[in-house]
Length: 52
Image (cartoon, rainbow, N blue to C red; front, side, top):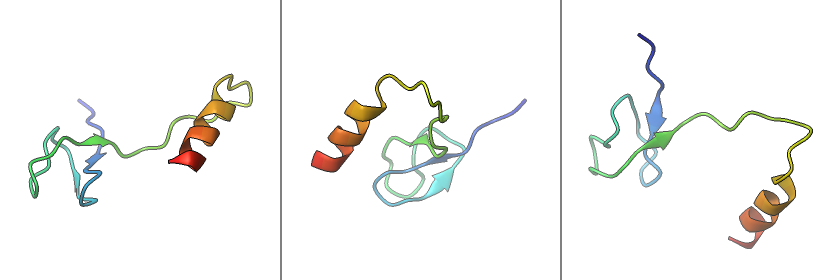
């Protein structure tokens, strides 16, 4: 059984559970998305990240 490590976006804590043990917030996947040169939505993602 493999489990993926997750991180809390609020305080940066790494955990295996879906809830942060420090602040109780929701955790997300700690790994970046897979790179693809044929990424159709990369341009929109970069613009959104730049404006945020």
